[in-house]
Image 1 (tube, rainbow, N blue to C red):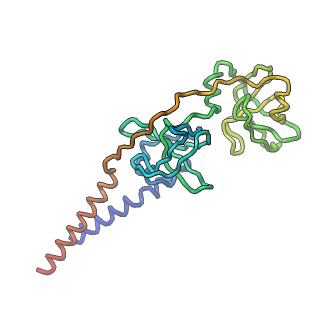
Image 2: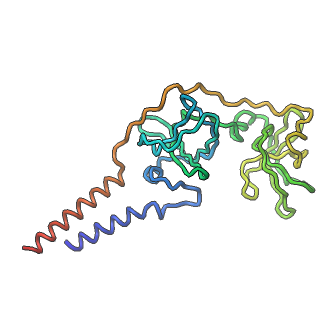
Image 3: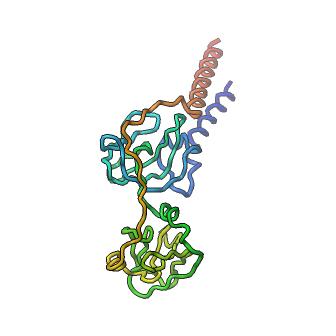
Length: 259
């Protein structure tokens, strides 16, 4: 009986340590629901605008709980790092706000995708030509744009020993060429204007109009998502079985010892 008790205790310890030893180099949230359904969650990493009913997108503690983590006004941005589809076919996105110290899951029906580099490639992929090279920039800070025509950019000085390398060239409506950079010094999936890498938005579009893009549009969500609690998870069932087995074993051991 003592041997059985020790084996059951060891099994419980292993189950408790599973989340700790399965961490990856990719960011993974410290969220209990995520770890219980880790194999069902999809890596996403895209920005959305809140677009829920009654001018509010409700963020819940988990897809299986009606407890509210936060109510976000429509129009504000939410970064969705992972998505999950429940057994009822509802898609959820995990989001968190470090400044306000809250996190949770929001129905994807409450969100509107912000136009990004993926949207640009889907819309203008036929105009992106093969071509690669190393960016040559002398002086000033190079600007890395979300996509050609975007107003959002990150600017910093490019070191001479580590110049950005681009692969894929796009020519905008003004005849300027842009190079796609998959990764450079921690920056991912950006575009740089090869003809004027240090120019800001106002300089680039002083006379010409920016690249016209088609922003995604969806119908307004009129009704809230109905949350249906799911059954107990596999880890929860195993833990309950272990507890019952330990209590039963302890009771039998004590009873036998008294006899």
